[in-house]
Length: 263
Image 1 (tube, rainbow, N blue to C red):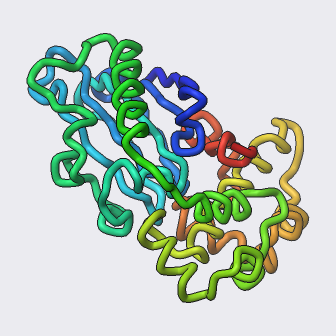
Image 2 (image 1 turned 180 degrees about the vertical axis):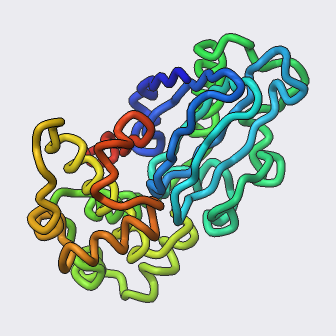
């Protein structure tokens, strides 16, 4: 399985985290996809596939998914930042949560109209995706960046509580929840859990060498969990594995480290 990421055009960076390309043989080893708050649009660019040129929107996930391809995969995709897809899909993000929907059903057939116009080369297909997003961006005006700011705060190294975040941006807790469900697909509390999981996986993968021993209690405290049991419970619910299994899964589980950096 080969995975490659490409940076978006600067004008798209407030909305798009990365473009990515995935190629895999049938029966390739599994890859655990963590929840990350993002919506992806994935285009099939395998010229031998019956679905070549077709695209699907993958909604925000609330739990990990194990991807184990049974047929050959050749895909080009865009990963939107949390909340970044809403202006392009014109569909409430919570209508996609934990779902995979054809782009036509997400009012976004313009992303991949099909009919043989999708380049079979994945890099060329990414370039086509980028051009279509830039063209769409020019038609979007008056965007409110408050949700993007709030998302960035939740993914920061020292995130605020939900009440603190609401006071910071001047929104009530109820209004914040409504806006997040519409733009991101999950509540601020759920996204905060996802962001903490992403930070935790990054921390454990970077900080654990083959010769070292997990200090899970210390890691839990550093990462904002109440205690080690709280961290273990969150990992089971969101990632489907225990924190101590992160080292063994390093080759098949990847945090989205770009989300942990300022856009």
